[in-house]
Length: 487
Image 1: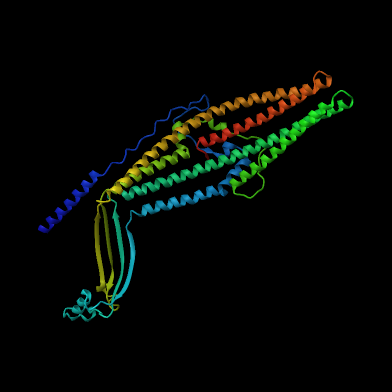
Image 2 (image 1 turned 45 degrees about the vertical axis):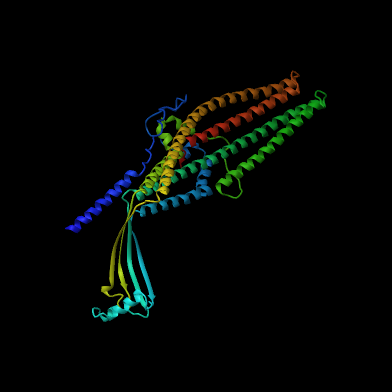
């Protein structure tokens, strides 16, 4: 009875020490909440109406609506080196998660040990073994070999750290959240990869269209040159006019050659992203787009922003750092380790497998930090500050995502109007070129007016393609801002 009371007293003292340690541990900073998003985007687009319903993720094929581009995007997912590397990193993150889960379970080891020792006559073990062999209380099988004393041990050993304060479980949570963050990082890389390819692809389409414009303009210039040359032969035009038209033609040829160089370089950039050696890139002859259809659905501001991979990645990293801080705080508390082993232990080979050679042991220990608290405090301080940094990064990512999407919705509307105006400009300049040729033949205009009209038309057509390219780039940026898509 007295012994039981003493044990209870020790347990109460132990509990008191643990509670005292817990009270002295610093607190984890309270998780902060990001600022509430506006209910609407700052845009005049009527199509971009808002709703509380979840935003439907994009589908790449229906967004871009270009079969040649879709083939390139599908190939990039299978072949891009950076994307393949990140897939391997996700497998590594998954392995870290499995390790963190297994840390909560007991460990089991098989221990086998064999040794032989010759004890000196003037040692405690040597004298003790000699005296033991003289005892009448032991059997012949229990006598110890004194020349070379074996020690044979074969057992199963179990050890387990009791996760009383949540240190191991919080490490598991941190590993799980970082695994989720790595998957969002992969989705972010995929979105950037597909966006980069789409941007280069549209640049190729634009370069092809501009090359065709130069070719058609050169044909128009050649017809004007033929007219001027014919008039010079009959004395109605000067050599100066002929040379001006020749110079203009050579300028067009030089710029067309530079375009061919840009086309080759852009193709090589796409092939690099595909992980391929050389070759050509198949593409459409015009800008094919269906991106405006996405604006027909009602957009939930909160849903679309938090669906973006960069925002999701930052959110999971915030959760991971919070778990890190909790795990760091648990290091202030005592660690309870339990263990046991059971197996065979003998000092002779004949008796090793005897049932009476079976041995077992129960182990228990408590480790409380005392003099190393300075290190623990610094680790906790760093973990707590990392949590604050992650929150600020998360808030900043949300802010950038909202403003980026809002600006792109404005831009999408503006480019539609600009394209309409530039198309009408080209129509008028086409008429001006025809009129200038007719006036020249009838003597009411000089050759400089023909050159000027053709240069204006050429520049307007090139500008129109440039605006089409900017509109396509805006489409790609909108794809990224909406969180990318699935194939």
